[in-house]
Length: 100
Image (cartoon, rainbow, N blue to C red; front, side):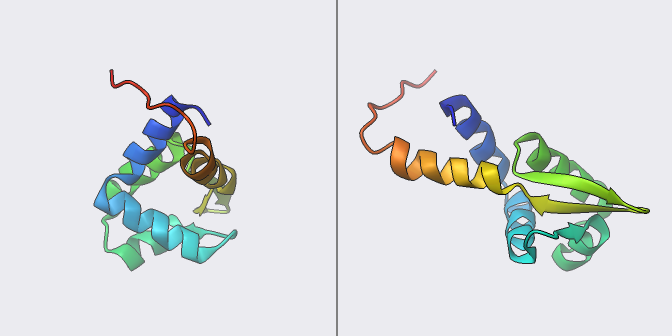
């Protein structure tokens, strides 16, 4: 994972509602949850939830699938693995990245 992508992913998680949604979807496992259930469990209104899910999906942290009239969201495990690998392994001996 490249540094620019890491910044996008971390920025998506650096917001309380999105972090709550992401945590819930991690707990839900590979089947994910329908958007309505995410809204119900988090207390986030559907209009706000849609925005937050879009941000998480744009960052590659979640993916959506349509099943009938429901849209299910789940964590995108490859992105999560790549992020952890970058944070734990890749940063071990790398020189600091300059800001800007």
